[in-house]
Structures are given as structure tokens and as C-alpha cells.
Length: 241
Image (cartoon, rainbow, N blue to C red; front, top):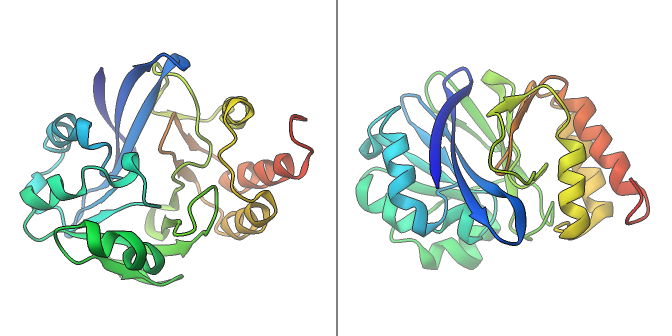
């Protein structure tokens, strides 16, 4: 297991832990996205079992105790499994999630009340400004949402474009749709493809320059075109790419 830290956009860092998983040839990565700012934000706390590795990596960028927001897309172990561990070492931090997730999960699970975000609600971190976007059932989880960092034109896109492999570059301008579709062919994690296509069209309108993924390499380039390409792929019959 290895953990590395890379700056993928202005003041935005990808913390990535590579793990050997027998079911996934070549291994798999679990990424957290950290915004270094006046009010630092971590998106995905990661698995509880990876807390110490993630904490050590964050300390290379900023004091863990300074974290203010602990965001995640939807309630799942690799998204928020280490939530209470981070709340214990960051006294001013609060969970950040959708209103649905706060209501059905995080309000009970977390040791501190969450900041429940409405669709389109914005948060000023200092240099950066983030906006919460509800994405129910996309790619899965009825409580799902994503973060748009307008000041850095970066979309924290969660499980979208999930790629297998442990030895991947932190950022690529190459193809991540092909590998992610290969992953989906063996483990289809989309809950509702029709709903996903409408959501992807909305995300493409943001015209992101960087797509910060949770698994695999992040993407730098024409994010709108890539999101549109994913939407077109989902429109095809299952198994046809």
C-alpha cells in the first residue's frame, strides 16, 4: 500500500492510496481531494482502515487540525468511513453533504452535526468558492451530490470515471473514459442511466477544466466533452461501447 500527494489544480491536492485487490487486476486507488484555503475542505474521508495513511498525507499539505469541512458524495465506506476519526482530530470540522444524506445517515452517524447543503448552495472557503450539486442516483446513492469549485474550474466528480489500476498518473490529458467503461462492464455501478444522462448534461454545462476523480487518474482538458461522451456511452445498449 502506498499513498502519494499531488497538486492537480491551484490549491487542490489529490491524496491517493494504491491497494492490491484480488478482484481487480492491477490494483485500485482510493483518492481524497483536499482544498488548501482559509477554511480547508477534504472531499472523501476515505476508508476508516486508511485513516492514518490519509492523515499523514494531509499533514504534508496543512495541519489536519485546521480542516473545516469534511465533504463526501454519498454515504459509503470509502466516501466517509473515517468521518468520526477526522472529527476527533479536527475540532472545528463539520461533515458536509446533501440534505438527504444528512437526514438519513450522517445526522445519526457523525459525532458532530453535519452541514446539509441544498442543490446549488455555495460555500466561501477563502480563495476558493465551492458549489454543491445534487446528483441523486448518479452514479448511485439517492443522497449523492458533487462539488464544483468554480474558482479553479474543477469538478469533484466522485465515482464518475472510476478506473482500475494502482500505478496511474495523478493527472492525465489522455483517455479515462475507456478504462472506466471497462470497469463498468465488469461491475455496473450506475443506478439509473437515463437520470445519469440528464445529470451529466447539467455538469457539462459547467465546462470544467479538471475532473477530480475518486478512483484512478484525474483528468485535465475539455471536461465538458468528456462528460458528454460518457452520456452518449450510457445511451448505448449495455455491453456496446
